[in-house]
Length: 331
Image (cartoon, rainbow, N blue to C red; front, side, top):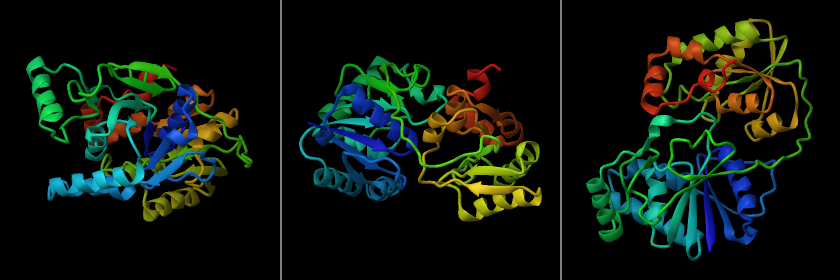
């Protein structure tokens, strides 16, 4: 039997590797499905990997051709996964993940951590019994392949009596009614040198994801650069940030008379956080700030500026219930 992990970030990648070790799975039984153009050129992976960005992104067309998209996903599964499989996903808000689960050869699903802060309002636990019964009939009996939910909705995971989740702490999935298992991220020695005197600026993909107004985000980037930039600075951009946005932010450092060294998208900052000591991190809401705090680094989290300035981001917090940095770590 296979164990299929949906990988959409460095965090899910590391959590997946920790889960494989925790469960003592055989290498030949593990399949990693890379989405969102994920790549990792640092870690040697002894498992089968499959590029799944195209099929997951194609879910945007499901409203135009529902049955056609399901056939595409089923064909992808049949071509890349042999026999029955267990599925490991960060959430079930994505139609493609749902189709992976409702495929006839999938036995059950588990959750794996994909970020730092918990999202308390993404789990729908208080679902009336009659609605759960109807959901079971729709999917288990009538064979409906997709369902409407946030990250989890009670009654939709009809193939199992309980849920397992895998994370590096007990906070991330505390709102999910699961049996949570603590896993360890693998350590990877990086052949790089860092000067602990230079701050590491972590920027987000909030603009491209529609979470923050572009002009407000750039204004706040300028503000935190003014507050925390040193003569030289390391800069880590989010993969979702456009080249134009990256250049604009880099120019803000130059305007202040500061130099920058751009950190490669291919190197997981999580490895840097684990390997090095006494670094300084600056940013708004990135999960990396949470990890940096957990591993004892100095962190300047400027989420308050973002919340006070951006109506769009305040709406995102209200809708998702993101656990703020200041709520998790009372300084």
